[in-house]
Length: 165
Image (cartoon, rainbow, N blue to C red; front, side, top):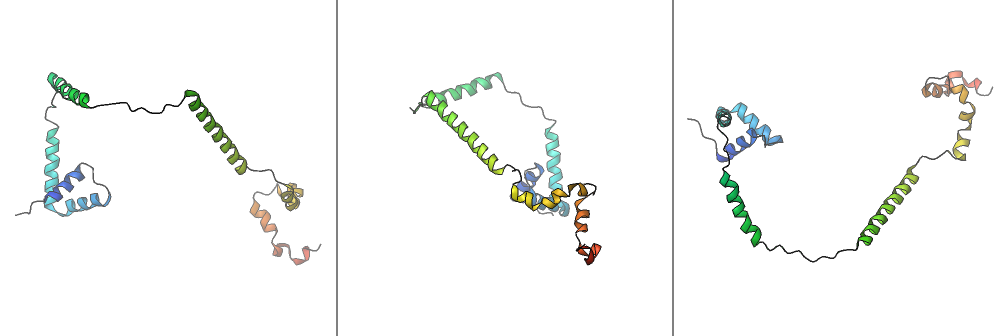
């Protein structure tokens, strides 16, 4: 005789079939369905029961349903003492001025950040450092990539005697 599933096992199985279990918990139930015949049979029975629910007619609310619901809600809303708490209302001009100040501050902050992070034109130190490259730009243009130019800088490519000439 097979052992019936505990309430916790049934709850986990129902949650798994409803798609409510995720991750490790779902994998644990899946492995139990594969390994244990009792769990597999219970899962199949639950699926059959849910499939049969599709054939049942859907209940239609009666006309009295709305009236009874409204009758029950009306006393609840009437018994709630909804009192507007007096609050401080700011003058409209002050609110507009606050928003305008916030907008100006946001624009100024954005402008300041963009000025700090904006690319700059090369200054004199960079131009002096790269003067040889700038002067010989036309000689570098025919090369396909920068690696070829870097290989030309290798001292053993032309020998040591070519450096002084």
